[in-house]
Length: 576
Image 1 (cartoon, rainbow, N blue to C red):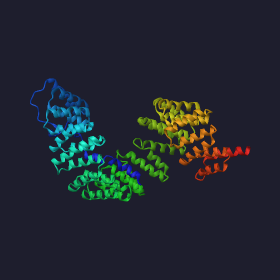
Image 2 (cartoon, one colour):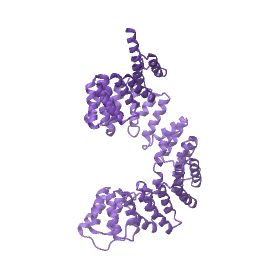
Image 3 (cartoon, rainbow, N blue to C red):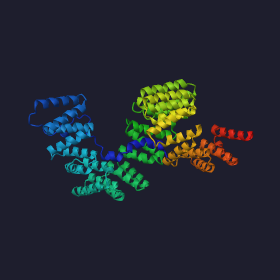
Image 4 (cartoon, one colour):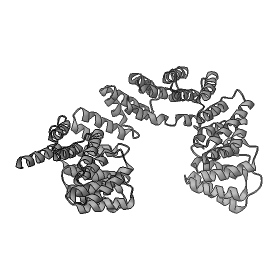
């Protein structure tokens, strides 16, 4: 399954139904340039006190100068003080623009009180109550606005009520059914009803309702999308695909429909998905994300040159430059052109691929003998991207560990912990560095620091128990720590391996073998194989031990963990 393409298409549709149901901006791009008919009632006839006029002037100036929060505060205060409909409407509009729910609730409620027959404040108040999760309270206002021609709140209310209780859904459904009787031909109330049926898991009824809407109103995108979604939920993928295909043919210029169609196709038919993405890219030449998805699809289909050209074009757009350089680095690295890959990875200085690109760039530099340059690159990124500093410290310390510069790795992590003293991953990594540097007291101190912060941290419990087994004779203490870790993660093969190893040191050989065999069945790892082989060897089951080791060596004949154990035990036998 082409998961990489789906991962780029999914953000378009992770909430496509919700967005289609409620794709309304709460206010226009500038709350201070709204058309009068949008929110403003007739101008008041009563004069305002001088102080009120002064405050309103300050509020207007603040808005024009893009100090909208100050304008909101002033207008809200004056709305409450004057109870003037025009000022209250202005305050509500600014609150909607800023998506400031407390002020929106306050001002839209007041505006509704001042002008109960005006559908505009009812619409805003319904949306505010919906956003607050007060769905039943929102309904009367949404219905009032709906019957006056403002359909958005009634649909938004249904869509946003997903996490409401079953009883709330039942009550809302009853009200939507009653509303449908008042306007039986209205598609919006029918869609709202179908949404509520879906939330009540009455999907067959929801599908029948939405099919009826879709048949009568084929141009309504949300009906087409919801029909597809319901067919998928009813495990009818072929019918879902055919339904969406018909919808795309009926509305060939719909971005949402064709993009959802491409997403469904991508699961099993990447070439067909690629074709749909190409059509979309031609229809919407300025949509960067579409062109990026098309390039990903080209790359997955092996159309490398087409993908390379597309990503190269995308590097010229600030919105896609970083991700495009990362993908070009991927292509170059897969082709073995490491200098070119490095050039592209070094261009990734922010975004979701920053850490991966930094790790790959530093690895390429280090392997070419430029470890100092690799470290400098990571440190520069850390200064540029302070919010990602913890992860960049991790990458730097792991690089130093890989090149056995353990003292330097410890210093880097200590510096990181001075800045982030509560960070558990940094403490854990430093404990690993100390253990590898044969400094068990420091390793133990960091692991215990983790457990002081989180006594149920299974990773730290297991690590402490295992390192106690390796470096001390405190086997009973180690055993108890590992058992606590196993209670928290009973299926974790690493913890099961630790249990088997400490049981061996406690002299419970058969129990040890059982646990290590279980760990090996879950995770055929060299270290687990080395442990199991050693215990088997100790109880004179040498042939079984050799067979266990061979499971690793046949795929990795130079594995030093297994070979070192094998040489040590066979050497001991010869000496005996």
